[in-house]
Image (tube, rainbow, N blue to C red; front, side, top):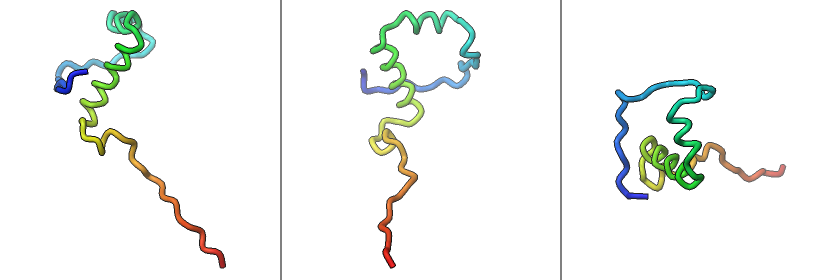
Length: 69
């Protein structure tokens, strides 16, 4: 995967149903698993960036010690 993340052109977005069988869906179904995962990773980097702190899931729970009485 190359290190430069492409920019997202928000004027070119379309929304469609997952049930529709489009040329794009046909294309991705014809690609291998590695190609599809690579594309997902590129999309993730476009949304969240490449900074290592943003590449992890945010922790939203903390563990605390139980104080016995």
